[in-house]
Image 1 (tube, rainbow, N blue to C red):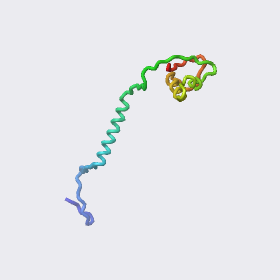
Image 2 (cartoon, helix red, strand yellow):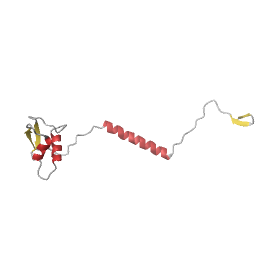
Image 3 (cartoon, rainbow, N blue to C red):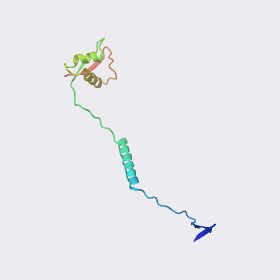
Image 4 (cartoon, one colour):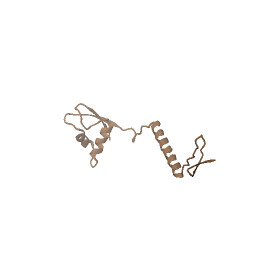
Length: 115
């Protein structure tokens, strides 16, 4: 049944709200699936513990006691084989001794690769 108002017919609505169904397009489904996948990977990355990763095995070392006037670059240049890069030796010494800087203190003991 419809009601006529000023010559315009308006369908009568029931008291309960009419439901409309929303259709999701293929693009929407793909986007939702990718979003869910990304969220799953992100959560898995947060929950999964990281494993310690060591690039090399055990390294034979010796020790060196720092003398007054020594600095890491000069000492590294004395133990670096001819033709090799001193900066690689400096980085190795920094890593091996857990140093934050190249500043050395007299009496400090350094672990040095025994190569």
